[in-house]
Length: 220
Image 1 (cartoon, one colour):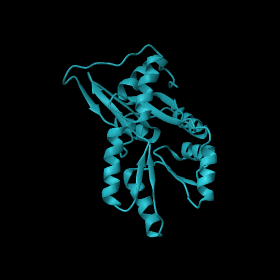
Image 2: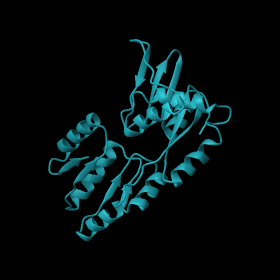
Image 3: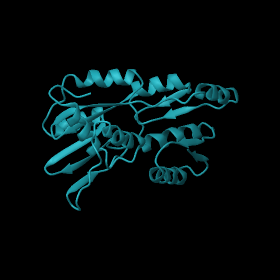
Image 4: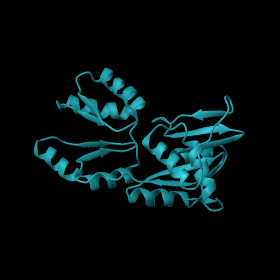
């Protein structure tokens, strides 16, 4: 969804390049999506580009290339970054971010230097039968909590569609650990399922295991 004065192809190309260092499922989806616009993955000579990997703290990824600085990430994170670069987000941006979030989608803003180029609309598909599975867990006395980096509007919609008991939105690794420790302090046994790429999954699982040694963890 390009902002006024921006071509859709320009937005798609910027989103793809800004996602090359993003190993999350969302980052990989954007690289694939860009191919629908005829944009292929770029190859850069050594030292030509400086990649900015996605992190839960910054909530964005990007690249510095040939004098251009491209970033893609959560709407508020990109807005803050653009303002730090001396620009201002278009007045149309907040409305698009809220609309996508209320629809259960993940809105990711894309910027070049001090200009917001537009928004990428991603949407998780809730697997068939998930609500029934959570009903079965609830009947067994197991409470389910969805922990996500998505904004609160998106998280609330997905939680409602899937049938989880509650959720934690815009979760950083520190907030995840805090939630787990709070549950344990109240005498609850905590188990986790994790959806992420293997390298990040192994790194986070190891960190959680060190911090919370008595919690079982499974990954899918």
